[in-house]
Every structure is written in structure tokens, then in C-alpha cells.
Amino acid sequence: MKNSSKIGKTPTYKIELHVTTQECRELVELLSRIGEERISKYEAMEYINCSKATFERLVLSGRIPQGRKQAGFKEKFWYKSEILQTINKNK
Image (cartoon, rainbow, N blue to C red; front, side, top):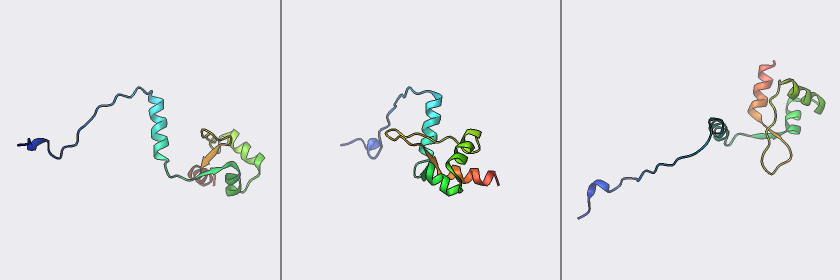
């Protein structure tokens, strides 16, 4: 006769990860943005209706966040929500 106390229980496993606090923060940030719309510099420029020079000045001054790089791609991208926050904050 089987021991009924083990039936239907899911086994648990302990995994040790050797990551820094900064790596954990970056992972949480990345996971929180899954599904969020990414846009290119040119799409962002079109969205806020400005020239390339103006966009680059806004980034350099910190009014628009720095773009992010994605492995395997040359161009940076921005999250559309960040651009929206920037527009709303600077109104």
C-alpha cells in the first residue's frame, strides 16, 4: 500500500544563484517590462515631433532617458511609456 501523505505533493528544490544586488535589480527591471512596447530613436522623434538634433540634446540634458542597447542590435531603443512620462512631466 502506498503512503498517502506523498500523493499529490509537488517536490521543492533549492537553487543557489550567485548574482550581485545590481544584477538582481536589472533582472527585476527587465522582467517588469516584458510586453512593453519598444520604439526606435526615429519613432520616438516622430512621437514627440522633434528633429534628430533636438532629440539628442534632450537625451544629453537628461530630459529624455538614455536609450537601451539590445544584444545583437546596433541601435538603441526606448520604452514608449518612458517617452510618454517625459512628455507629461515636461508639460
